[in-house]
Length: 171
Image (tube, rainbow, N blue to C red; front, side, top):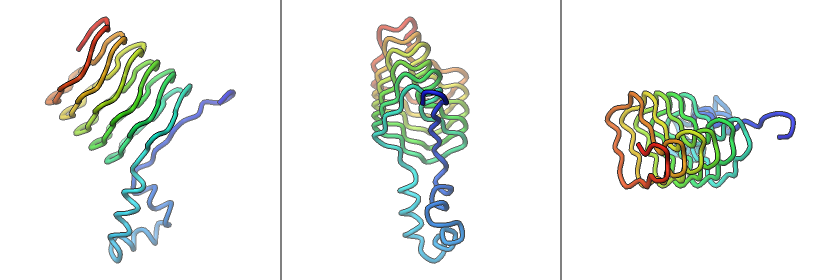
C-alpha cells in the first residue's frame, strides 16, 4: 500500500477452480463429477462486497468471461475503477465507482451487463465503452464526471433507465 501499488487480480474461473482443487483433480471432475466442477466454477466467479481504494486500477479483467462483480466499493484509484479488456459475458452490478480517473472502462468487451452502479465524481467518464458491442447498460447513475457515459465505436448496446446529470457531457 504505502510503498508499492496493490493490484487486484481476478483469474478466469477455470484457473481459480484448478488452483483450489488441483489441475488433475479438477479436470477429472469435469468428466466424472460435473456437479462438483460446476460448484467450483460458480464459487470462482464472484467478487463481492470488497473495498478497493487508492490503487492504480481497482479491478482489472483481461480476457476473462463470466465473472460477477457485485456490490464493491471501488474509489480513489488513479486509473480505472473497473477495467474490462476483451472480457465478455460479465455482470457488474451494484458497485460504487467514485473519484477514479475513469469509473468503468471497457475495451473490446461484449455481452456484459452493467447495472445499478454508481459512477460519480470521476475525472473523465463515469462509464466508457471503447470498441465494445452488445452490452446492456441499465439503471446506473453516472453524474458529476467530465462525461457521464461515452461510447466510442461501440455498436448495438442497450442503454436504459440510467441517471446521467451534472456532467460536462451527458452521453
